[in-house]
Length: 132
Image (tube, rainbow, N blue to C red; front, side, top):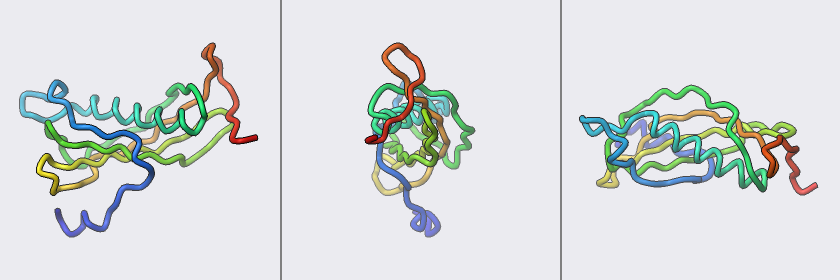
């Protein structure tokens, strides 16, 4: 771990954690960015569903730039936090952190923002009700 990396810590709550899947790796052993992006959206959905106390749907996904490659077997942790709340939507920031299989090298891999909208059982947009 470089000195600079020690100063940076994940922000938000741990919403999802798991190893980078071998099936999602290319011939060089690097995990496809699209697979990481899909897991980031899943983490945002988990967080939004908890906040909305029910069903949510993804309406937008922000850009992602990868700061480090993700190797097969890397343990990925997805940290989320609500950065904006609308009448029926939540903007969730997702930070993706990776830890090498040896457990020594923790670093930020990428980040993005996702917007989730609360929906009812029929798939219609519903207002968020935060204890009101």
